[in-house]
Image 1 (cartoon, rainbow, N blue to C red):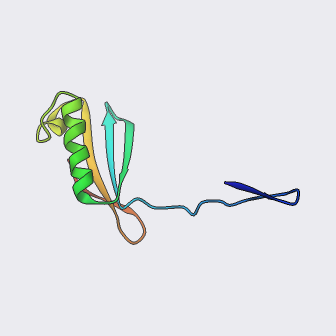
Image 2 (cartoon, rainbow, N blue to C red):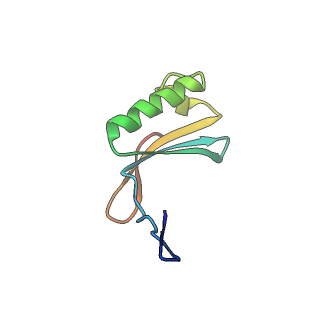
Amino acid sequence: MSKTYVGVTTSHLLQPVIAKYLVVVVDRGMTSEVNYFNSLKEAKRAFGEIAHDHGYKPSEINASDKYDVSIWKWTEDRYEKVFGD
């Protein structure tokens, strides 16, 4: 965002925001997708959609040799895995 006042341009940097939940998709050992959510309910919905997009049931995707999908929650100073193998 920039604003100009009498020939002077100022910029406002957005404050960093830490997502409460992440859904991380690992494809054959490499992170291929990271999705950010404000609630566990949204994260679980996305987990199910990701599983279906890759041709699996949510309960089966982590049993595949190809994908690892997990949900992470922000705690006081780091993310902790709350769902997924």
